[in-house]
Image (cartoon, helix red, strand yellow):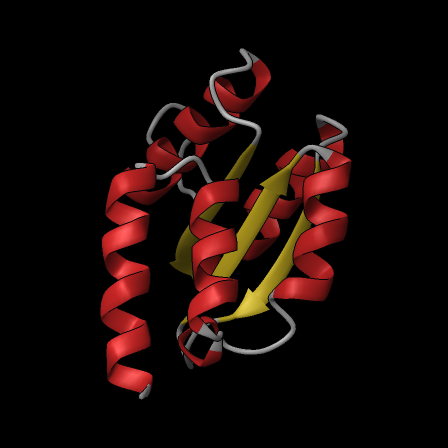
Length: 118
């Protein structure tokens, strides 16, 4: 998987930056979509750092990796119990808010999804 401890693929550098931001308190929860081949590395890192996480299949080749505060991950276990594209507009809005996405952009997204579902 990783040929040298000093050379990391860009995907893992992004993941490690997310972990750093979480540990510094910049984020309460992260959703990171990554190739399945990095799942063992990522989950081992999260376990070693005592960070709660949830792995969800995203496609044949990728996973959604949620990690963060225990209360957030507990809520995600209820909320994201199916592929993310199948979430209701309300569930999608809540997820975006939990992830710290721009609330005005989330409101616009919600209204567009509600119109599409009518």
